[in-house]
Amino acid sequence: MSLINIREEQMEDKTAVLVVDDEAGTRDLFSRYLAGAGYSTTCAASGEEALDLFAKTSFPLVLLDITMPGLSGIDVLRQLRNSDSPPEVIMVTAVDDPAVAETTLELGACGYLVKPFEKNELLIYVAHALRLRELERKNREYRDNLEQQVQERTLQLEQAFSDLKASQEQLLHQEKLATIGHLAAGVAHEINNPTGYIGSNLGTLTKYMGRITEFIYLLDGYCSTLPPEKSAELAAARKNSKIDFLVEDSKDILIECLEGVGRIKKIVEGLKTFSRKDQNTSCLANVNDCLENALTVAWNELKYKATVEKDYGDIPLIRCYPNQLAQVFMNLLVNAAHAIDNQGMIRIKTFTENDLIVVSITDTGCGISPEIQNKIFAPFFTTKKAGVGTGLGLSIVTEIVARHGGEISVESEVGKGSTFTISIPVQA
Image 1 (tube, rainbow, N blue to C red):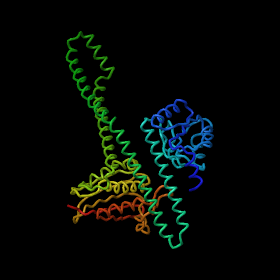
Image 2 (cartoon, rainbow, N blue to C red):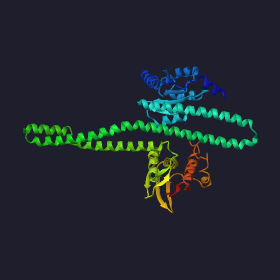
Image 3 (cartoon, one colour):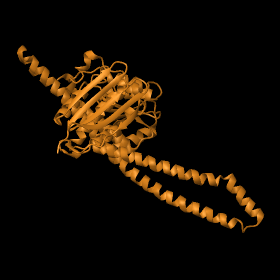
Image 4 (cartoon, helix red, strand yellow):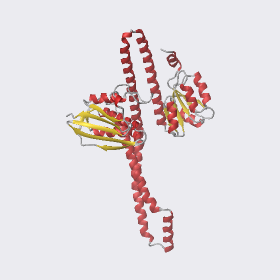
């Protein structure tokens, strides 16, 4: 075990959180929320104080405000990530700036929490960060022990060591995917309850507006019985207050709100379906539904990059692993979005052919050069920048498709785009 690991084991309290914020109210709020969940907290009012405290005690997690007098949160993040035992860091800010968020994540932050935040949102971020740290610690320990064993072996075992290391990294990747799936399920559950009563209240409010509108029209019938000056005064007040516009616009607003709630429910259902743990259970399912679930989960990656066209055929149900197929489609859809530089098109088509269900996903992205087309399905091969891709996405896709008795192929032209085609046998 390395000296760093020994220091972590002896000095690090795995429930201790360092809260760094120049606002006392925010520090107190963090401390109260975390204490209620069983975490111990230490507070610092500045970046300089935080670095002094960290030099004396190893904290596994730091909640770090970005904007502070003196050292900024980003300056503190740089120094913490360069320490002998760097903690997990969640940046906290009142400004939702994608550029700043990208900078902090590139510097090693594991989260970007925007004020104001909900208690459950904070606790999910904290639990995920500590879980990720524990996974990385176990992986470090396992890697160190494995390397020590390999050093004691002969040169003839080098190939075996290479295979074992590859399996280890794939296992870590799958464990992180499981953690993300668990986090998604938790978020979906937390969103589901408020969405339910918001939808119910909007429905009730729609009925109320209907009754109010009926009452206004009833009053109109009595205006003719009023003295002329009162009738004119009432008509002027109605016009100045724009009552007719408010009544009609309220109907449109409520319709839009109910549509928004419906969209949220659809996203939540997609998250819950995608994050289920019963991935090893096969059942009869429609591949079109698997595609819809994948689109729902991956939509945030797609909506700013591409217009999605869907051409779903009338295909039969097949016995399959729906969540695994959804993972296949999500990986291909996200890859398609990443291949598009500015704005483009993603086309999805399903149909049956020769007792096969065929799914094609076409993008208008940068394309794949012929010399690497036969390499993209190999484990750990990636064309993305270092630290961005693991090279496991298409390898996992190939494995899942093969598990269903199917095949995957690609046709691509540089500068014009790519088409990935999956063929799966129709099973009774």
